[in-house]
Image (cartoon, rainbow, N blue to C red):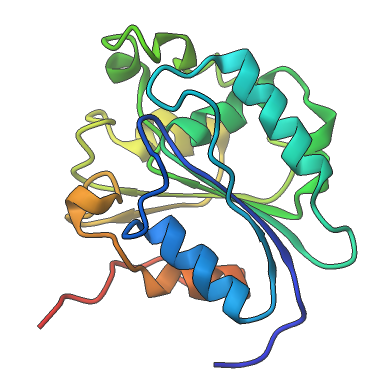
Amino acid sequence: MTKHAPGSYLILHGWQNHRPEDHWQHWLADRLTELGHRVTYPQLPDPDAPDLDVWLGELARHLDGLDPAGERVVLAHSASAVLWLHAAARGMKEQRAADRVLLVAPPSASVLVRHPEIAEFAPPALDFALPGPTRLVAGDDDPYCPEGARTVYGDPLGIPTEIIPGAGHLDLVAGYGSWPAVLEWCLDASAALTARPVAR
């Protein structure tokens, strides 16, 4: 693999995620660290019953910690993808620290409001501009966004969106324990976000 200048990565998990070692986010953090990049992959407080304001505070704190010496990249999965939108709607100045952002499988309001533990994460009105280059990737059969991520988020926000057939919620249930394409995107912003290779 080509050697790249060290970057600074912030990886954010979703609801009920206790950073299991088999998840692609853990896999990605390990791969990037091995390549010499600075990686922050925090366990956010109370992942089973998160508080939106607390998570927003943690987001601001971790964005402040990104190293300005290299490229600063944020990858947010599931509830944290919606967290990023709440921060943008509130004009969080710390978001400007990110050079590029990947939103992965954000859940829709129709699903979030059915779960009291996370209902307050239901997305804000998408009438704001995102603070920097942002890309969206989701499965075409994500049970947490039955309306479709492009329809719910990609088109209203006007951001590049890639829909992966059969990728579900891009989580362990869908088989995403490793995901080479997301590593390639971390190293090259122009890389396509494709499905993981099928195990043989």
